[in-house]
Image (cartoon, rainbow, N blue to C red; front, side, top):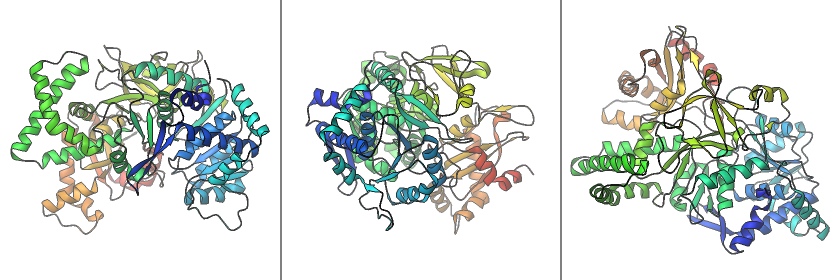
Amino acid sequence: MSNILTTLISHQLERYGSEREAYSSIDYDGRRLVPTSWGDFAATVDNVACAFEVLGIEPGDMVAIFAQNCQEILHTDFGCYRNRAIPVAIYATSSPEQVKYIVNDAGAKIIVVGNQNHYNIARSVLSECPGLHKIIVIGPEVKLDDTDSDSLRFSELLELGSLASDKCRAAVDKRSAEASDNDIATLIYTSGTTGEPKGAILPHSCFNAAIEIHHKRLDMISDRDTSICFLPLSHIFEKAWTYFCLSEGIRVAINTDPHRIQEGIKIARPSCMCSVPRFWEKVYTAVQEKIASTTGISKIMIERALKVGAKRNLDYARLGLKVPAWLEMQYKFFDKQIFSKLRKTIGIENGNIFPTAGAPLSATITEFLHTCGINIVIGYGLSETTATVSCYPSIDYEIGSVGTTLPGVQVKIGENNEILVKGPTVMRGYYGRPEEDAKAFTADGWFRTGDAGLFDQSGALVLTERLKDLFKTSNGKYIAPQAIESRLGEDRYIEQVAVIGDQRKYVTAIIIPAFEALKDYARKKGITFNSLEDLVENNEIRKFIAERIEKLQKGFAGFEKIKRFTLLPKEFTIENGELTNTLKIRRPAINSHYASQIEAMYC
């Protein structure tokens, strides 16, 4: 098998020619896409590769990337691959301590930074990173320190590469030709919900296998599709997906501002987009709010449309069955009148598939989205498995599951129902952590995911809980908090939830309301408040939320239900250490930060 990432751009240049678009960047000021052709992509990557060679980057050297999504991340990645070097992504929201830790742990020689904040952080830790020799600055607006004589702007890096000698270019070409599938492609640092993050070693063979496997499974997509780069490129889901898209000739629209993603989707109008469940939870709650405010004939039509959509898409299309003519006729009518308008409002009227993973998405929301003609493809994977382990097939998928295992990937259920994985996409191990490798793999080579699950009667994989999150009450009852949190995430008045109860008498929760929705409710009910603190402490508001929680918990066992809760007037944040960079809850931090509120619920 050839080294796909090292030869990807040259292969696509030969396949499509120099003029065809490879990717685009979203220009929010001009509300447009700025395209880059395969020819320009190849030329830029060659210049980056040559510049790295001039700067002393050797095969096996690490180059850190600390930036928000932008085209320069792709230039750096593929410039590294041409040199057999190793790009190491750092989340753009990382703290100085996290940046210092990863740079030193990986031994990075160069760090590529995005904006002023990233540059400032890199400068602040430079003296504590003995192996770090150079900062490359992407943002042209970044003001460099007056004493900084060592940093280079990305434009200067490209100029350095363009002036490279023939000897330099020959050296880069030689390295590319010698690239091996066993070379490390990248280190993906785990989000670290507990303990320090670890660098998962993903060789090129992992990406080769992942690209080939997805090509076999995702037979409904082609080079006529467009994907928006939604999640951070430091996230294995987005990185592997973007590489797959480039290898398939799918045009990629790079979202350059994570705070404007909803606007970005409307500019890009993608047919594909990988995302995390929280995005779709927000879509669901917004649509439910709109439905709740509708009256008369419009409401009757929406309710009828949802029944027809569910019947057609869930009972027939999902199972690969022929849709009866009378049902298809009704669906086309409601799709034109209602569903297509909903999809256009979101920006996904050209929708094909929308892979979703990273946390549980409730079956209720999944069914609703499919009812509306939004093809959510639920999957499951980890940094250590080069993303996807399983996902929905095109037909015969089971809602409530995370799909079926991908071709070439083996999954079995081990002790404590832990999901074990083996196959060509599984990491080599953790960088410099042999003791962690011993914990992560069984004696016969199966990777321990830390997730519990089972196979249902259809052969689909069902996640039951995250073993690290699983806790036991003082009454000896096991609680899977993610299942409860996922259910409460369906509610339009609830933004974030942390379920509590380890070694406690009963289950409680810290809840962050959806403040704008709750303020609207308060105004309609004549509830006065001067601040968010007033709002969350109001007895009528608490009673309202309690009633909604009780309805949402229908079907849970009595011991699993939330008995008491605390409403907070501020969100959990990455900056406060309460969320990982992938927006997962850091339970130890929440238990520590809100210890007094938690204790009060058990008095």
